[in-house]
Length: 110
Length: 117
Image 1 (cartoon, chains in turn orange, blue):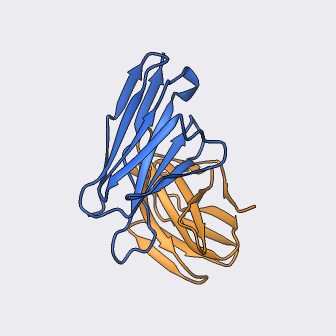
Image 2 (image 1 turned 90 degrees about the vertical axis):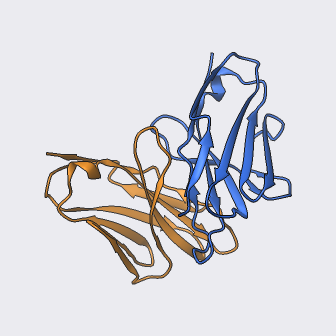
């Protein structure tokens, strides 16, 4: 069964304290690995898509990387406004369905 | 670009009534739209996939007669929760894909909070 597992469930950081979120996947024929940000009571906001191992993408303080078994979302010098739940999702070849992990709730304290 | 809207943003209804939720892609043509349900502190669970002009494909365990999906155009899909009950209270989110050059990326609407009394 295709699975996406995120860790940790929750992460508290001080402003400026860099860290990484993990997303491990067991999806046969990975087509794409997606990262989304979700604020409370809102829909997910698209961040990145990664398609192949070794690929990296950056946006402001965020950088996403992909290996054959997992993806990392690195947050450099986070700010309080980066507080949100970060969701990882994967699709496999032949399907547009997104299989979501349970998310990592990030809290950045000033 | 890639903006998806939902209406209403929240709705409260009595048990036994039906509720319709609209999902619109505002600046692109969505060949496929998806409907998700999210319970508190849970991740998104796919309910169904719909392609414009054809019947929706429902995930296992989702009652197609209870959750009616219509995808009448490339910019509009609707979800109707029929004979709603308190256990149907949830956060319903739609997404759309079809943006040229962004193969199978899904863009999500802001969600609709349904409360059934």
